[in-house]
Length: 301
Image (cartoon, rainbow, N blue to C red):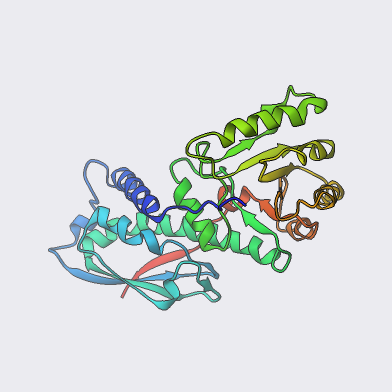
């Protein structure tokens, strides 16, 4: 069976630095932080990073990189609660302590919080979905519905929330979507997909997995005879058709060999019922594109 995609942490840190530089330049402009420049001398100061609402924390792996873009002298000490994936069940949780030149910490404050609040919001939303399907055997996956430039960071945050990463981009896995097959009649579906799968399997390096999307139940059975498909994606299926697709797959003895994934109109209110149909994967764009930021703050001690 296919190997799951995992975001490379080195890539996450490198992208965090690139984005932090852009954010720094955007914030400081041509003149720098003119307010903080009014603070006399090189006074040192200590700040506490605090969570102001319950949620799941994410961003520990990139916080030092973001701060280094402003000033390498800013020191960061993490508390036990400041672990990636840690549940923050009460407000006013002390996550970390920052110490360094007061001017530079104040200049970096908003950029650091923007990163950590965004990532923690995604981790928090992801955990809500993961908890909702607990015990069903289904896993929550992200999608490519990410903020441009932020994909590897947002997918890292999904993992902090207990979710799983789908393909990272168009270049690492094959997903034959309905638009790729729009002009293919049902009687030629298996033949056409088999040719595409065979070509995909011959690529070097091989794609992480091969997945085929269907948007109606009648397309499922023809694909079950195609060797080389790892996942069949059921797009916008009704609950009844989803159960029927699971039954067709299981009847052919393909459970454990071909996974079924559901996408489209998945919400916290519906995700449990979807998971109980017997599918292994549920992809949810909302965990990245619609996650509200978690309220964090930096307070001088």
